[in-house]
Length: 221
Ligand SMILES: Cc1cc2nc3c(=O)[nH]c(=O)nc-3n(C[C@H](O)[C@H](O)[C@H](O)COP(=O)(O)O)c2cc1C
Image (tube, rainbow, N blue to C red; front, side):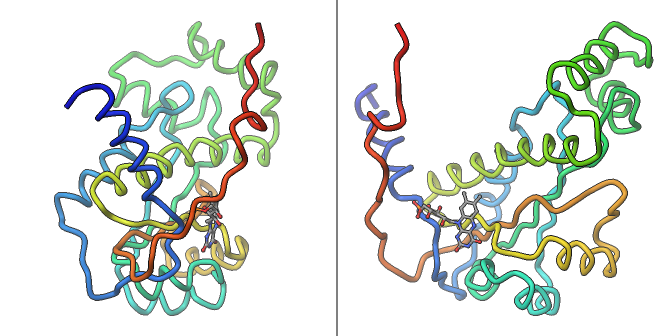
């Protein structure tokens, strides 16, 4: 494939991805395709490499039914998508939190100390540069990062001919309290970021409506 064919292929992948409203519930995603989609999430970048996320794959029909009244934007996916994801973002990720220690030691294979230059640099970044000084701002900061795996999963799916729908149409308090009662989330450590459905469309590809490039793109000389 030459460069021009590659460019066209990539743009077609993006044009072919749309927020699928009607999925065909009879079609299943091949396990290797699904593993590739999840791997694109796992390989996603995160601030300082702390990977502040977790993904729940809801295969349980009772839970799907229970979610419908509290997740209006997810009903289409809950009814027809073959895979249904709830993305969780970590809370209170700071220089001396257990998760940071775990990533530094067990994932990055480095030694950890609260007073190391790296720890203090991260502390300064959070507190001085990004003003991440309370629980809400810290949570919003990790939630932002969870949208990178979302984009990667949707694009990877589209490459594989698999449709998707990103979902924020739910009541966060109700969904969190439901998942907590089910023992599926520890609200001290995690909050819900978004949901997403993956499967096969049972509808035509709608026309893409977007602002023209000149309205969103400015080159500063
Ligand atoms: C963060 C986010 C949340 C969204 N929430 C929902 C949702 O709850 N339900 C839904 O059907 N679509 C949802 N969408 C889909 C958007 O409406 C859709 O992406 C947008 O209108 C552009 O259309 P397209 O993705 O088909 O090109 C969401 C999209 C994003 C990025």
